[in-house]
Amino acid sequence: MYEICLLEPLLDQPRTRNTGMLLTFGTSSLWCLCMCCYVQILRIAPGSPKKTNDYAFGKDDDLSPQLISVCQENGTPRFCKMCKTFKPERSHHCRVCNTCVLKMDHHCSWINGCVGYKNHKIFLLFLFYTMIYVVWLFYNSMCLVLETVNVKPYSTSLKFIWTMYKVYFVTLWKILWNMWQSAWTRSWVPLLTGTPTLNMSIKFQIIIMLYLTFLFGVFLFGLTVIQLYLILHNRTTLEHIATHEQYIQLSILNTNTANINDDIKQNNSEVICLFPPEKRLYDIGLWNNWKLVMGNQWYLWLVPIQPPHLFNNDGYAFPYGDQAYRRIFKEASSTSSLQ
Ligand SMILES: [Zn+2]
Ligand SMILES: [Zn+2]
Image (cartoon, rainbow, N blue to C red):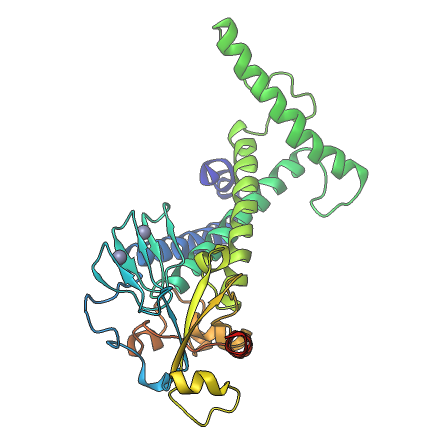
């Protein structure tokens, strides 16, 4: 639609051919990037835990000794009844995919799969590039409409506001009304009939594109901002919306730990119930959180490939944030003092 309505007229005329070629190049490059991300996200699975009865399997040695670990209410490791295997921290069972997914973010119907540990970066890039592409189409179609009604795109005058009002509300209302009339009277009423403000040289498809790109643009912008926020706070969508109790096992591997109450030291472990759940459990600072998903190499951040560190790490264990440690130790001390 964009190529037929916008690029072809530009390429046809010698005066605007250069602009048309530049726009064709820019649009095609963005489209290719979106497609690369889409193919990559379909290709790369989020990762599932290996089926094993050994809970310690896959634990990252670099993170030991682990003072705390997420557990079930009775203190036993998390277990998936469907997959019949231990569930590493942050992994969840997806009913649609029928498997456990490592560091599961959410199940996405657009990609017919889950977003998780190994494809989170690609998913963010997919959202980002698609948003840029849609905003680009919106900007171009808006420029074309404004040019036709002879208003400058950056004008902030009342004329601009009035024109946008007419383009968005009056025209949409008239198009919907004409569609209704066509259906009601069973005779075709041209869709742009009665749109007094717009020059009839604007193609109907451009108006539709203006609406669609605006709606998709707002939607994708919202999703991208939410994903960025969650990644920067090292939180998955499931962890962000969780409202149920969180059980943490506090193990005393290092008896010299100063912050811990003597009672807990004697028992060697303690199960602590956190309610509301600790959303900053894995928050290790904005910069570190970002690198955990996007990788250490800044020049690969915008390239839709998996960050190299994922190949050395298995997604079974994650470092805990200082704030979470402080809250857990505080709760552990208060629980012990009540007994
Ligand atoms: Zn499972
Ligand atoms: Zn799924």
